[in-house]
Image 1 (spheres, one colour):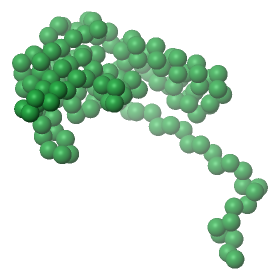
Image 2 (cartoon, rainbow, N blue to C red; image 1 turned 120 degrees about the vertical axis):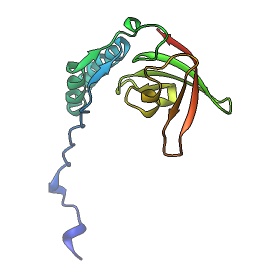
Image 3 (cartoon, helix red, strand yellow; image 1 turned 45 degrees about the horizontal axis):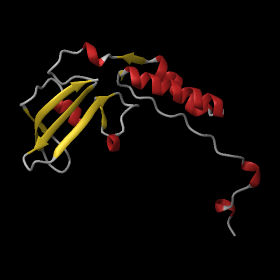
Image 4 (cartoon, one colour; image 1 turned 60 degrees about the vertical axis):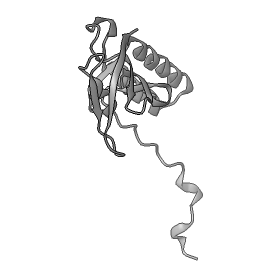
Length: 146
């Protein structure tokens, strides 16, 4: 039998690679920074050096954007946006930082195609989101800042 596919017990565990850190600016909402700090504290308490290093870098590079400082009526970072497509399907999202984004819960990264399409637009305006399945047009119904 060839030894090429047999694990030797003396090999030990394989080292975990560092988590890659995004090269984009690390914009965060005040809530996003709070969540990052909480995650960092948990990783430190758990002794997870890989996660601690990643989260410490993200906290240190955070650029806090206060959504309430944006002009009302224009979609910017931190906005909650409600829109609809031609079939009447509703889109409801909040534009946040990369680490806070959770599309299944309605938060999307400021760098996502939907966020880029919505940014700088107002209620009543139509925007086109380019996606792999083909472009889709939305009409903005509401913009809120929390």
